[in-house]
Image (cartoon, rainbow, N blue to C red; front, side, top):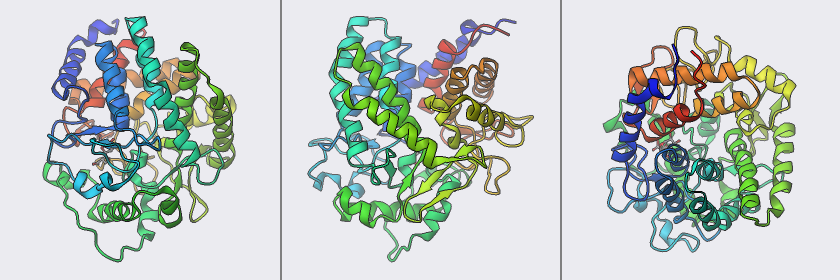
Length: 441
Ligand code: 2M8
């Protein structure tokens, strides 16, 4: 049987419908009710899928995110839609409008997310049918993208080692991954922060972070708010400072894309090569663990590697920055039925099944996420593992065909979890169908 674009007609049109339903005009909500604003890395993943349907709308997704850019270059993790309510913490909690760097007239959070934006912008360009329009788009965003990366190196590379630091679990995008457990437990919360949790009203509690996690998340936001989001002060006072693998891998992938963008539009790509070499080297020297054959997040305050076997430790494969011999060892672990690829279930678990914290139903503690699978499909293909990449793409499409466009899935039985009609699940399915199926059965 030939499985190609035509075999997935229904799933493709279902995905396109979800993107239309979650469209607010210039941006796309990650989910209809649970996430009613614009999120940073969601919009990047969404733009990639949209680019197969409508060039201009994909470009607008990225441009609208950049409208929320701060004067210091930061692209925030959430841009609030003033017409949407029902998400907490909202703009009243973040209170970023008090901060001189925050954009005027746009309400945003005060932190960022894994920087895959430039990578997505380049994909949007490559997929465009109108080449001239797409070049204009690149010209209109290039300086803003450079400014974002200047921020990541000049402001966020606290140790001046070529590794951007994250200051909050939300900046990793993998909010309650077990890698943050010990760090969060160590935070001394003197006064319980005041917040409400709407997520638990919409989604089963056993699929979401705990209240203890939320105490820590909110405590950190209240701390940053009290410091007026001043990064020098946060660097000295925050109990959460991590050189994260997911963040720096996506940064690397974006730097390479940014260089291609600059070359396309004949712009100066000056600092990009230096940054790339610096970060590539720092990932190899500081984050690589020879014994475990993988990269580990690094806890800057306690000066130790965070030794949890989680899927994002392998993301340097997506950035294409792993030498072949290391890559082969990592891919062997990744495809193993003991760790991330359950024998009778669905790959890839976000936490190794061998870790005691592995939980097949809880958020970033084990379930399959489509964006992660998508990045590994790209990574495996880059390293010449075309059969494994296609296997993973088909398994991912089977999962969505059987269970729907969920936020995440139980890897053991395929059950859909979290929010239904989740935008990046829809968008990346479109990209998988369009670019990752060879037509082999
Ligand atoms: C989740 O994070 C938000 C906070 O940013 C939340 O739980 O309320 C994460 O899965 C994150 O990666 C994602 O960008 C966001 C929106 O989909 O939801």
